[in-house]
Image (cartoon, rainbow, N blue to C red; front, side):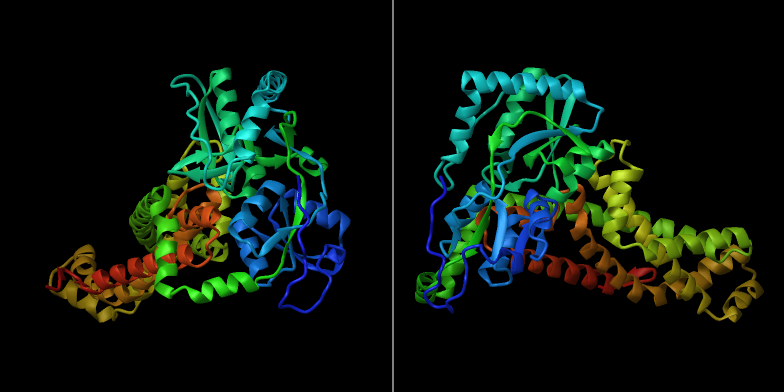
Length: 483
């Protein structure tokens, strides 16, 4: 049941804040969500600001960047439990229910089997039991349900967006929530071995269409627009779209001002890192970031050297191919190239997101590295090569022993900067369901709604990585390392 809450601030100007001005207001929505579609169709005058998850939208609402946030009721309830300065307006804007989504017209047998289980769960009370367990649970006191898993059998890959507590979220390093329990039970009954793929909500439909996942469950709502691209199961939970607004913040400001900076940091450290062993998310994310960066750097350097030789070839066709490759890779935005590689080029390959990300960044890195190598080699005076030939070296020996060391000495400072950029570039891999350092920070923020600590923590870690990388590369000289 939705509760009416006073919508006027005790410290702000008396303005309309009850949703009646929705058509002229700035509204935060989640990208690709039902709320976004609803506002576009029914409130064309509203100015929409799209966010990847509810955490960012709530932060925008708290700091006055938007006047309202439209989201699912469960998202809103979870947000206001942690943010007493926010409130839910007592009006349901939609009544569509949550469903399981399947690829359009290609997996009707699986959908029918899922519907059979859902119908039985609805009749025997299992569905009501699951819903009540998660929706009515006090904040942070969710049940620890151990659903049996099939160790053998065909894998069912399910796409989720694990930032929608209590429907789907990360707890103790594991996928948890209402959606998780429901699809786990269904998969067990149907004999499937379940595998989750966590990604941004806006990428769920793309993952279905590309065949990356077999089904999607993440508080996913059936709409006429989505029905053109995917098929739906029966509804299993009614989760209407509602509006959140900001109410009086005077009390919370007083509380914060009376507490010391150190005590606030202590509490943030506890909730963001210690609680539910969330530091493991950061460590695992850091490991993934490190693996992708190292693999990309090694592969990209080798490929870059090859492209460089093609670019310097006397053969016009070979030279043209290399130039086209360089122009193409440098002209496509990194995140667009990453999604093309994951959802189109390697969609049916079965390669993991880490492997695809490593290949993609290596290709992009090679385009830049090849030009660094070429310009550094061409900057060496032709007389150096001629001197090598005069000393009895062949063409290859003259290049390897005389030209290349000088060229590498000149390229190292530029290469160092590009390598640091590569490490920072890996922060976008969350778009293809890879849980790197940035994604780990996002998962923590989605649970704690703390906009400061996780972001600053991730920023500091990236800074330290870049500094250490720059330090060690700065110690390297051609042929030796300074001691």
